[in-house]
Length: 250
Image (tube, rainbow, N blue to C red):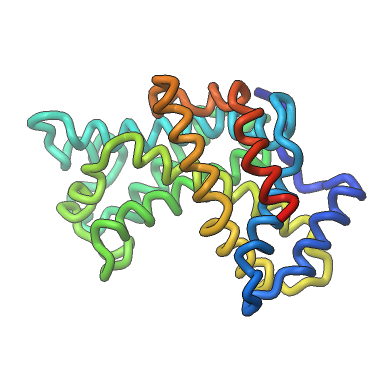
């Protein structure tokens, strides 16, 4: 999949996205609707060939998702030694707080798996961001009072004892959020970065989470393996547009 979201937006699309940024009022009773509309407007109409769908179906997303699933799967293989799994990903044996080194090495491997052209896209940058944020979310779920940077090897291993579908759902949500964030930032004009950051946070909660759950449901209904989800997304464009369209007009 080659056509992917880029930071330079067409004038009319930039105008529409800027309008939803201006409309967002964090303390308003309608802020959830405003965030949903912002996410849908940033995504644009969903079709098999739309830039957002092509981004979600890209090699960058597929390889980023696969790397996270493979890591979790290897940890959960019967009699697997977590230290061996971490060592195979370049984590030093004496590192008992492995999150930072592990994340950096997963991102490095992702870059190595992509072509120079793929690495230069906004989608690849979004996947790198989503990979790190997904790991932090998964760790937070298992260790709510700890920061990812401070968890031990044992805590990390426990955190990733999740079904692969749940891991895929977290990753796809963060990919969607990160892609939307790049569109919002490209269109923000003189809107404050703090406002766009808050809007992005709400988009993640109100829009990306719903869309990721729908993608997960479609994958379950159609018997698609979690690692194969990105390649199937163009086939689900009509179902996804039905959801995105509602957000766009609310």
